[in-house]
Amino acid sequence: MQGASFIEKMKKTDRNIVVFYGSQTGTAEGFSNRLVKDARDYGMKGMVADPKEYDMSELCHLPEITNSLAVFCMATYGEGEPTDNAQDFYNWMQSTGNSLEGVHFAVFGLGNKTYEQFNTIGIYTDQRLAELGATRVFDLGIGDENNNMEEDFISWKQRFWPAVCEFFGVQATEEECSSRQYELVVHHNISMNEVYTGELDCLMSLQIQKLPFDANNPFLAPVIVNRKLNKGQSRHLMHLELDISGSNISYNAGDHVAVYPANDVSLVNRLGERLGVNLDTVITLKNLDVDSSKMYPFPCPTTYRTALTHYLDITSPPHSNVLVELAQYASDLKEQETIRKMDCSSAEGKALYHSWVLDAERDILTVLEDLPSLHPPMDYLCELLPRLQARYYSIASSAKVHPTSIHICAAVVEYTTKTGRVFKGVATNWLKNKVITDSCLRPSVPMYVRKSQFRLPFTASKPVVMIGPGTGIAPFMGFIQERAWLKEQGEEVGETILYFGCRHRNEDFLYQEELQEFEKAGVLTQLNVAFSRDQRHKVYVQHLLKKNKEYLWKLIHFSNVHIYVCGDAHNMARDVKATFHAIAEEVGELSHAEAVDYFKQLTISGHYSQDVWS
Image (tube, rainbow, N blue to C red; front, side, top):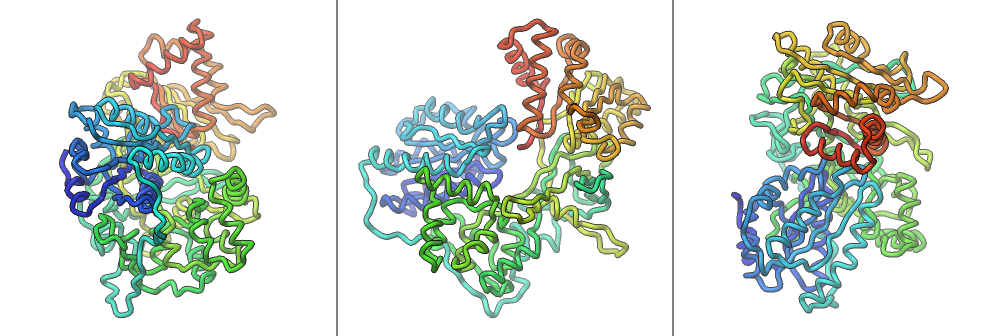
């Protein structure tokens, strides 16, 4: 593994704790920062480290530092995969035979129980480090995003630090530590050419585009198509096409396109008004720790407006630690007490945080609106809020057919919360508003492609069964396009079977004309559609699977079929899997345990693949 030396950095800056993170959405990185901040309360000095930037084979040298400890906050992405920044570290753990004797470690895993491979990476990291001879200082922590990740982390952290103190023979210091990590610098005389306006890494990178394009250097893709797919008025399902001409971006059917959205302008303006701040003030938030590898929480110098629009997540419910940090700025003592109670360290506090923040879906603006005496400094708010993350969509096209464009199929998120406010999904509403006009200036989207393991079989003659209700059809549009193209090239193409589901035939039968044309051309050998609300009893894709159980079992057991599932992980994917288990039991005459194991083996062999979200 190549990378900088974290051991040298720790020695040079007199640190004894290093917290590594594997993070796809920023949560694991945020937890890592909080652990390093906590370390000061115990007379320890820590550093947050991205494993992608360091030579992780140096772990064996950590015992050279007295009372040293490595903590790993490791998220599991998708179906049991490491996050992008932890892939190299994961590969190293799998291949290394180096002894880690004398290394002290602890792991907190982040995952989502709706996924079958729950917390795989955190569990593997904990087990593998122990196998290599490292000493576990505290038990593996398990965070579940489907329940309450914040609560899980706080509960683990409250037990973690006493265990660390006991292990190393230290105790909490009496010294009062500043809660601030960054200091505010206001720029009065600065050229706007030196000010970030939404770039992720290099200044002017969105104005002057340079290859290659990736997560830190997204391509500004023009939107060439933006059309509504459904006929009903209650929802807005959309199809977009992004022009990637000249970008050198390649993709395969099944990959994901990542887009970097912007927050709603009206929300940003309301935040500025609520806190009485000139949003066009040019600022830098500079790390008080001069030896930190992360000097700024987001690209600086920039304006408050840019930070709140492009860099910060202002629509998710704020974590309890953020609220507790802000409590000191409430002038009303009752409000201050209410906020402090929500620290999730007690059952009462957890219940209050659940009901007042999570269940009510309050974001930072609604928190400020409902607590009128709360007036935190805008710079501190910017320090505490998490980063606005890229949104991932399954690509709805094949590069064989559309080499210069990437297609997106998405549902606009908009609903009324328990407080009577309208919540609008950041990315889908931002994409919806990328309207194409008659002017020569086309709207654009900062994007890059994330490779996926969700792939058609290498041999085109193998049969495929695709199950994707709603916008879960996205990757299958790419799959079907590719199978049609292969057929046109004269290749033998196996059975291509689609199970699609929607509410009403006349309202949201997505891509109806295209699918029926594919069926007419013999590319789609079966088009099975479940219209859930067109009859008295609801019919879903799993009901159609059950109806065709004999034929499906024949494909599964005798024809080496590849099964693909895309869509909702919480209900649909589970119900579909349970239906396949039932088919194996009823037609294949397997016991329930045998059926579960049978499909587990299909998953391992790549014959049962899921691209699901919660």
